[in-house]
Image (tube, one colour):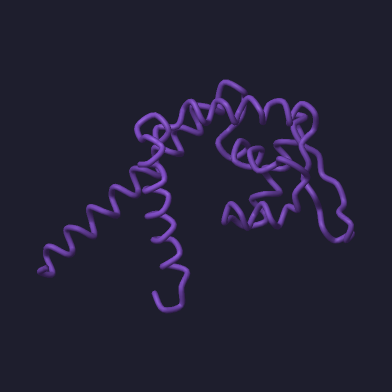
Amino acid sequence: MTDLNALQETRELAMLTHRAAALAGADLTRAAEPMGLTASTARVLLLLEEPMPMRRIADRLRVDASYVTGVADELESCGMAKRATGSDRRVKLLAPTPTGAETRARLVDAVTSESTAMRALDARERAQLRALLTKLVDAARSPAAR
């Protein structure tokens, strides 16, 4: 493969990956808006199957802890979540309220039905895509990939 062909392929793969991520973000926004949620509050609420340390939320979303603090403030102000102290007093948990848990359940259904990937790909294709994306992400984390 020539350098120009490799560059073209690299560019095309990057663009398609970026477009797919943008589609997923738009799907989430479309599912969240009717519930009065932003994409940010929806992302956090979807993680709250049970109380979760705010640091773990930040790690799962790959964001700064201050971002989660701001989103937690929003979720608290609309009655969807509350902060609690963990077993270690230094750990702050974010927990869904009953309203938040009910909204989360509706959000799960909406996100699934709005998902372009769920509509466009069958189960086998989604499994292949998941495996390929996992391989790509894992390769980037590996010290040998750097």
